[in-house]
Amino acid sequence: MRALTGLRGPRAPRAPSAWQLLLVYLTAGTPWSSADGDPPDSAFTNLVGEEMMTKYSNLSLEIHSISLTDKSSMLVEKNITLEKPSNMELTCQFTTSGDLNSINITWRKGDELLENNNYLINASGNTLYTQYTFTIINSKQMGSYSCFFEEEKEQKGTFNIKVPELHGKHKPLITYVGDSTVLVCKCEHCFPTNWTWYRSNGSVQVPVDVHMNDKYVINGKHDNETRLKIMHLSEEDGGSYWCHAIFQLGESEEHIELVVLSFLVPLKPFLAIIAEVILLVAFILLCEIYTQKKKKHPEEGKEFEQIEQLKSDDSNGIENNAPRHRKLESGNQ
Image 1 (cartoon, helix red, strand yellow):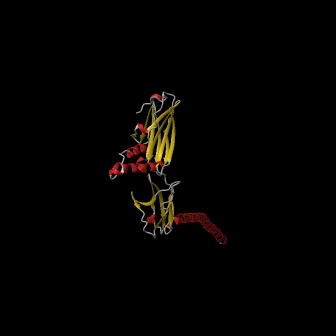
Image 2: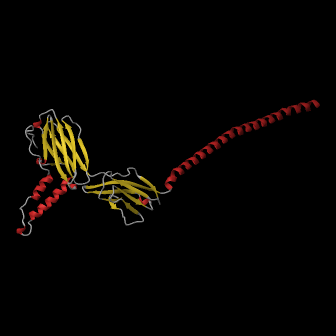
Image 3: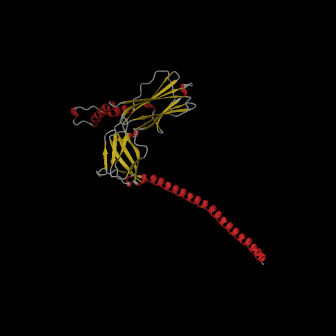
């Protein structure tokens, strides 16, 4: 923990960055003259140091800042995209109503505490400033750098330094057996040193066999966009594909899902509709037949009743005629 003292007095000279300290170390050595014979190792070190100095002095400078207050309740973060070595200057500004001298300031990379001679602290009014300067030259230096202001309540600001993200097709790409398709990955405003395509085989990523020229064609290996063309598709070609970009400071990848359908698949909804229509027509016909049968039964019942009535009337007529014949016979006698 670094206690803040003497903020209003003269400030110490600006602390050298990590790469500057490295160069001082490399350039330190014993002078060499031609009378000494072969140059000693220190002379070679001086040459290397001069090359490093020239190399790093030509790097771009990335300047980023974060503002905090003692009332902040949300985590303050800033994402920084970096694809090549650069000089970094990260600044945290903290405004408080308390005593500035009671505040401890530290910097961390992830969970690792950074040495306090690599960053500066300054004050103006009721605001504290801390600045961390360094050079990123490899992927190990990428990650999260955080400034901490510890008073009654700890306040934290974080810079997330990472390589650029890739952009592919987020929705599944749907195509059909026998067709060709093109998978596209892009990197906005960046140029990877190389692209590689992989295909998921279970939990393992397998490189796409670019030697199968009749199956795969890859374009744009050194551009900000890469395209994988897959020809003569079969259902087995469906699955997850990954585009992998390599930068000077790390790697990035994106996932694309490919779905290959047979020609019967589009017909399934149509066939389902036809089946529904057939079922509906069959149901209507059955209802119609049932209705017709129901109408016929009452008519048959009425006809039967009429026949029975006629039979009954006929039998009654015969019975009535029999006594009349008897009366006629008795009169004649």
